[in-house]
Length: 360
Image 1 (cartoon, rainbow, N blue to C red):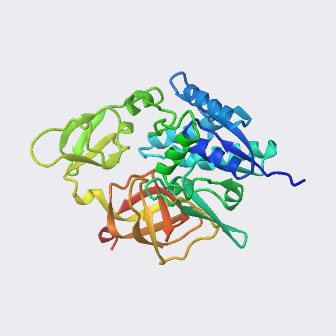
Image 2: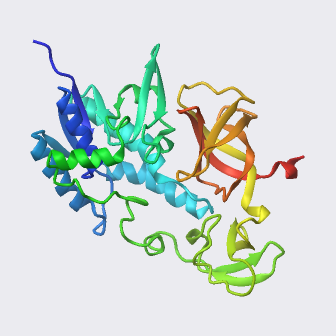
Image 3: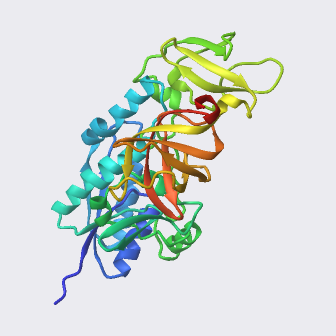
């Protein structure tokens, strides 16, 4: 008798992973659910999510295990998150979580359970050609999450399944309601998972002490005071507490050495636009550097349309990327992710940015 393939699904308590598990079971796979506890905090909403995940498993008649990865998350993701903010950068912990926890620690755990693959509710697609795995954007472009997966390797993609890659979010909701999933109308999670409904400022002050300083213009004129550089990011407009005539003020730089927040007036100020980005910690899904000077598309933030660019000065773990048009509000610490057509080929961490006119 043919043995059914076992797939271990990361059940988060949300509707996406629940529908992913249902789809796999409908296809005839042996499905096992795992709920990952990645954060240990009385204010973290994981208990509510766990209740929802267990309810889904009961409805689908699949086994579910609860595993505590909070120590691994602390050492591999959260410590990096704090260090980046202390250095004046704006990190994206979800990207690191995918690479180090969901598709590494969880993957290893799933293999010990006898799983042949792991599945999640990510909106992305995987294509295999001649033993080479490609990460493709989801059919639903408004929900595509390939940006958060660009650091995955060939080994990780070979063991991953994304059942929602060809489905639109609206249809996932309809399907969840039709089959009676208890979380069919649960609100999608937004923001950083371990912060929950708390404000960022309320959360981060427990780990990084407030360090007030000056808010200055590009010319060095004092225009206000800040409570700590950690509370601000490039392009931020709200919460600066700067009044006066003229256009709104925006953060254009964080001067960590002098503990100064540098601002400028106007959304179109030249200091908010960059067409040359210097990138470190490069990660290419194929394991091979892409072609230099080739025309690609890239984005420096998740909620952003990709823009034409070329890759220059490729080195082992760094590269320079040049956009055809200046990009707004490029923030060090964020990721720039590169695409060729609908294929995500990789990316890296933004170290700094400038304009080509300043280089020439």
